[in-house]
Image 1 (cartoon, rainbow, N blue to C red):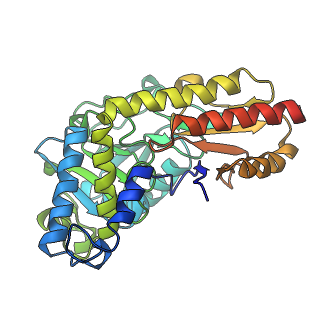
Image 2 (cartoon, rainbow, N blue to C red):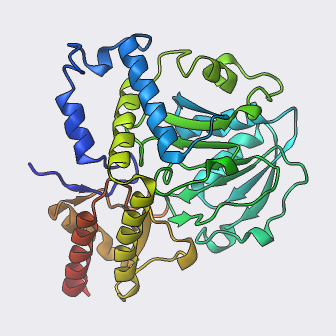
Length: 360
């Protein structure tokens, strides 16, 4: 059966070249007679895989030497708690920007561990925009400022990096890390679940400036302490070895296809193709402010919500799958991660035009 176009918000589609290489190496990685899934995480073979993956990620993002790259487990959700546990001394205040469901989860998790100041919120307009920084009510000498760079559910994305002076900037980039170039030195900590643009579910990336390690008061338990994982190069316990391996293949694929600058241009083209069609149609609507629209996740509604079930069923027959909107908001959502080819977006637009003509 030919591969479908998978618009899932996560786990998302992976590059076909990566899947083919992983399949070719499934039973025998580089003449070892072993699958990567069978290797000891402390053996020289897997250590070489992890080191190469980190080196390629550093190359892609231009990560300076003063930052640690950690390959962890627990997804972004565990980071919601690890961040305040590690970055806050005592009950210091942390600033958060509330732009949607994932920001809300981070805020609620932090509230049990620290004093949280919600410096700005987009709830007043159903999370369809990013509040202007001029309107933020920031805390003087906050432990850090946290923002969610891309909200997968509502399709809102920061197209800019906040400027908060000397306050450490912390960002959940689960759904847009590696989709565009990034100045890592502007951040104290970046984290991301892998299952969007990076690799399989089960891996979480943390990029943390070394001066932010060891600040937690009280000291977090060993497994929740960044210092533990930095000292052991993410080998304190068994890491998600196969997910690290596949992520490494994705990093190489990105390097071989022009790096993050080229990935950004492809993502701009894909998003423009879909948004331009939606905006030109009376049958489909996207509610997000144009300046804050996500390149990664495009939610939209049909003129008649009663037609959405028919739309989704017809899309599946056209090999366009995982288009159902998040259960909390409904509607339709197309996720356009790095591995989604523009041919998939064109196929979706063609189907949307056909459906509108038939049902409109």
